[in-house]
Length: 378
Ligand code: ADP
Ligand code: MG
Image (cartoon, rainbow, N blue to C red; front, side):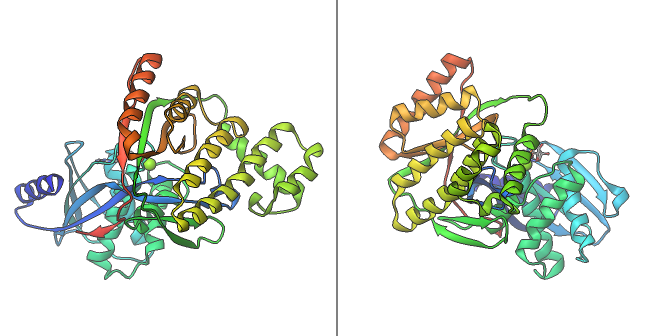
């Protein structure tokens, strides 16, 4: 409510009118890491942290937009040559351009926006920003004729073409399609998806942000992709999606130890996502938690994308008796995501904060998340 009021105040002060309000959310991924480029599954959900925007067509060919959080104003045209200087505004410009490139309509508009998705913490504030504008401009200028999957692609293309980030589709997909109390299993090969209930009564989801991001030498991401591709090629399949542990064991002696470990993680991770989906249908959150620990272990030992700080946070969670805990995101820093029983929550947060601060000299950041609605008109 506070965010909404601040946006409305600012909008009426700047533009002397009232626009329509839209919101779109950040996201978590419960399980399914490094699976997208292997044709596997991811399992994200939208969260109760969003970016909200008030928007009104202004009858010109100019976009006039104010960011409350950055405290900055941008004005730009809608042609390719009109790209604004400010990074935050390029997300909005990119969305406009990507809609136009697809034959959609975008006219000039006035906008004010603000959000509470932490920036750069792995919760995809950028996807929330793209999605809220993509959703709103579809409603305002296109009679909602662009389908929701295309809205997600518009956000993804914005990152690729205007922000220099070669991301997959998961973040924008989750932000656009998110549904309260539901996670979404997205099949990264067919792009089909299914909602699963996520209503962990008696548990909370909490992220512990290490606030570290290790600068890495070389290209560890590409090296892992190449390992997966080599093993798939050896098995005569397109991606590891189609591999089983038995297949992998059969060729073990013909591949490097490193490629073997990478593939073992990816094949195991596919099954863990499916297990978690089955468990959720039964309301079995203990199994969900057990699989989260297994994923962490795999990411740390087999895929080797964890780091000391995140392994430490995972160990603290285990010691406290937290139900499930794992590194979230590509690795080498960022957050752990934790499924914690209500009555353990205070103890866990305090222990993790204190122990981490003692060892690394700074406190982690704590984000509570509740699975919530994705892009919508308010
Ligand atoms: P994340 O992991 O949160 O998506 P990114 O680096 O991809 O991190 O995106 C963060 C960028 O998105 C910010 O630098 C800023 O340009 C833009 N952004 C996100 N949230 C906001 C906001 N509330 N106000 C203005 N810009 C924002
Ligand atoms: Mg981002």
